[in-house]
Length: 383
Image 1: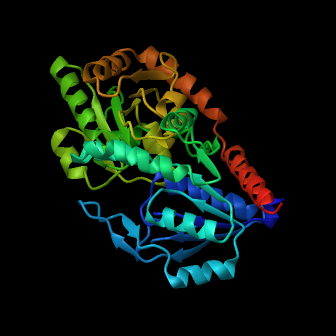
Image 2 (image 1 turned 60 degrees about the vertical axis):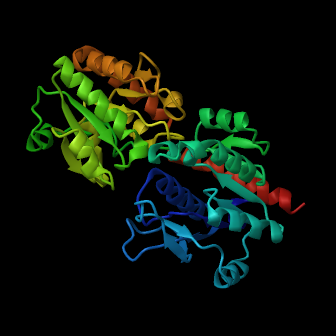
């Protein structure tokens, strides 16, 4: 089967109303599918003020706001009769679900009922979120629920080898392959560094900026980040904290790291400039399945200190492009950061190595892998 024969129904819990790495990848993929001649229709909750314009035809799915202080996200109510009628008119030949949420379960059921192949892509380690909201006892249950979900689909696509290994460890029996990620190398490169921009933020040319990049939510490891900063301050290490991004935990984080420079949400050329303005990138999150922000920092020639966890372990070469640290070891994080802060030549060599390593991440190559998976599944279903 050729890409021009594909009719893809994509189900996403958040296609464009809050910007994140998952929906960036999905929009990029749907753009590649459309360019290849496929027909695309996307089903997702929506809001009146989305973060960006969607790629492809987007159908709004009825939804509720999430509880527990995360009302910026929405949960689909399921597949209403109107949505099912829209699906029938579209006549997809492949169903793609991007999360094991209520919408994903209903889409899987609909696909099975209509004899269609179902592919699932995994973007987020939802089971780890519980530990950040005093619900850690739910983690084993969430693992079992996800394992059951992924065992019901025809194909699972994960973004990294470590995530494939994790799913196999869970007991996922469905075929698991890798859909990697790409980087806009024109946007993210060392040439984007702008010392004047740093000066405007109060960061001197001779000051070392330890950067955070991403949504400001607890599950990104903000608590560990703050404790490491406190440890380095207690040691008398001189540096600035540069925070790029925004989110519901911004005020909480600002209280924990009161001397940090908050650059806010950045996009486009401004984002490339901001990332290149770091002297090192600190990523203590254990919730990553890939780490788009990590590859963006590497592409900008910025060394990385990250948790030795899924995603980062596939990207960071310990001692070469940065350092991998046991996820909750505050002292080890502080040691790695201090080493980079106090050694300009180490920062330079690790950043240069990271820039070279990041060159392999190209969107065209990554999305071609996914289109081939679509084609193979749709062809098998027609036999």
